[in-house]
Image (cartoon, rainbow, N blue to C red; front, side):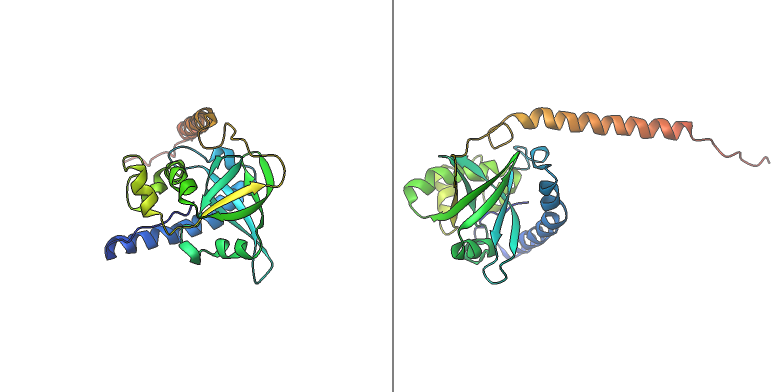
Length: 217
């Protein structure tokens, strides 16, 4: 569902992480991207699973618009994301050629310009907050983002490109469905009630199903 920079890992752990990344690619293609296209993004973001935007960037060779779900943070009027696979990240390489991008946020689509930020004075305070906004996937950096010092998180992500996505119009303002918002509380409550109601309906239908008579002995 997201990309985050990875610290050097033992072979077995690295193998597990590669498996997780491949699984996430399948999940992104068949669930996350279609769900965001349908406007279901606000129903997906939580502090546990993370908050996701959909980045649309033009392919540097094909010219085709590519869509990638990414964890994000809104700060200083812009959206911030990490190129989790380093300088080999495809969407990162694409926006270096064409920085004109579009992002699909909960409830809005925004045309923007993307740029890499390398200044440690900007990166170091922002990286820990961005990783924590990713929820449980934030553990993929190699440490717990909730217990590790900010300085350690910044150091572990030293070689991971940080991208600022600045709107061409008005500055971005974090809404109730963005990181730090509380809309996920009632949304997840609605989902839980819906699942419970569906389960009860299925149980009632099963109880009403006529039983076939068993042959006598």
